Image 1 (cartoon, rainbow, N blue to C red):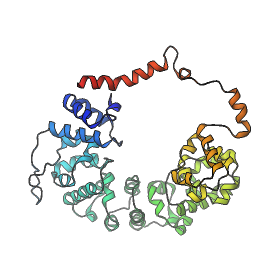
Image 2 (image 1 turned 90 degrees about the vertical axis):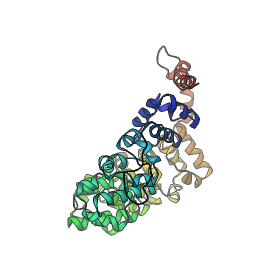
Image 3 (image 1 turned 180 degrees about the vertical axis):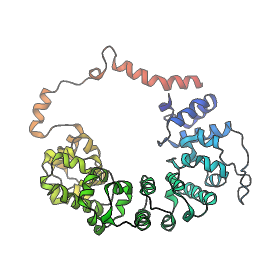
Image 4 (image 1 turned 30 degrees about the horizontal axis):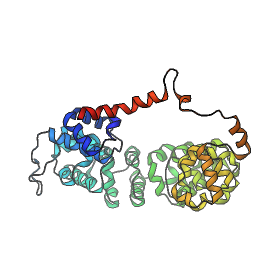
Length: 391
């Protein structure tokens, strides 16, 4: 039932909230860490708020008089629907409520900049200036840390790689913020780029995207080789990926000699290939690009792929092609992209494959004894029955 509720309209969700509030709130808790529709979140928020005892904030701070601040019970039951709190309500929550729930709040994906800023200000109220914070304070922040500017990030004690690793789990840092975290770790730990071990590189995570060409060149090849697959999960700028590609050449040799396993391991680093290097790749290697690497290829580089290379991408990689990349393609390339999306084999084999392919019917994928139409009715009947109960 839960997943279907996210498909209901606002009016339908209001009826569910009135008649089945427990089901709605249980569904919200099961969807924690996802991004449900706003209408669903607001229905959960109103359901919880209507079912709880309302009272003004206990915070005596100016501006908090009469503000309905969240309680610990509210925060626990709302899960991702905590994203519906107004910034002033978050800023006015009691210190004890904040301390008990900071990790839950830091995990809410739907908070925008104003709400994250309010939570950061609350953290400063409770824990004092960032320069006084201990490691456990930073570890508990989650997405709240995204509200810190470059100067504030520079005040944090970042000598421990575990602390930096908790920050690098966030992928929404600006280049300036990421640079502040990287610089803070190097300064506080007394480390140099050339001293970094493989576990340091893993812990630095997304902040590696803030390195410049000189810094990347200083990474030891042996340490880079040990974690190249992890670095290949990062979505960095084109310039940074190009520098990581150069580092990969020191490990795997000339790109023209790379194998399918190398392309798979490199992940997004393969998006640092030049157009000349990309043209040299055998079309049989194209399915071994990671979809994330396809998305990261600059539009002007992607358009240099031949029609044969594009046709060989495979459905998953073809689906990763961005609208901007698609707009750069010519007619023959677009036709090849469609063949890749359809899962067709290269043209040399296409006619034989089509003649040998059995006709597809909806029943072909149905389990023995179960019709496809019966399975569809079962899936669609649940929301229909739910709506009938609401009437």
